[in-house]
Amino acid sequence: MKRIRSAYATRFRQLLAPLHPRRMDKALHWFSTRAEELSREKRILLPVAFHQVHEITQRKIQTYVRHRTNPGDYPDQPVFWCDAGLGGLARWLRAAGYDAHWEYGIDDAELLRRADKIKAVVLTTDSGMMERGVLRDGHLRSLWLPPALHIPEQLAAAFAEFHLERRASRCSTCGGKLLETAKEQLKEEIPPKTYLWLDKFWRCERCGKLFWNGTHWRKVQQELETLRAV
Ligand SMILES: [Zn+2]
Image 1 (tube, rainbow, N blue to C red):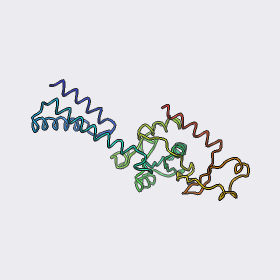
Image 2 (image 1 turned 90 degrees about the vertical axis):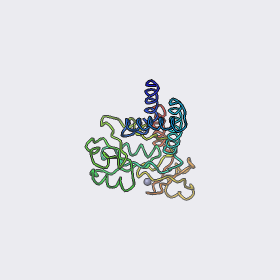
Image 3 (image 1 turned 45 degrees about the vertical axis):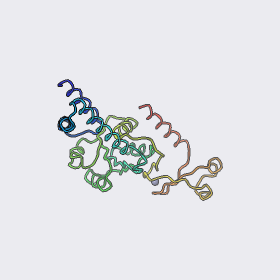
Image 4 (image 1 turned 120 degrees about the vertical axis):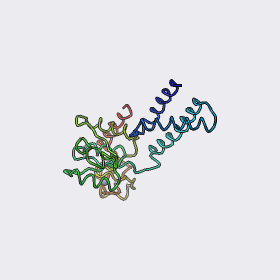
């Protein structure tokens, strides 16, 4: 029986790991108690009860994880707030399809206040920032990135931590959504050669900036492709 308990403790631990429970030991104890109750109530063998509790939990977690990571469920989530040193990462997150805020020289208290207002995920290289109450207590989600990481590595870390998938790019300047716009309406705003060669144009719904598939855009998209390999 001891072997079965310890085998199930391992399986429950693996099941819960993606949810980062604060008190793993408490959660494992709960499972074990629940299995014992089930065994008594339904008069089934304890290993069978463990199996059933495991199955039920697995289904619940799968639903939760799918729900959490399905881009269709929360099309605008997660929104990120990048600390003063992560302006580059903010631009890459936007190219990868996520709304990411960044402001030059903003102080920690103000950043946290604004992140709290929109329930943004805080990304920071500053371990001192992680000690602030709202982050330490998990009131706001956050990720500390070691200062030595390069931008693609920072991006890969954020993708892994929050189970992100690439989406349609957003405005690299402000993170607003890009709306495809009829070419004819833009004649005055586009260089004549570009107007001649290209047909697809997008406008940021937030700041109004125009985008098209220029060389810079292609380079960004190619760089993002490397994320697939991570
Ligand atoms: Zn914009």
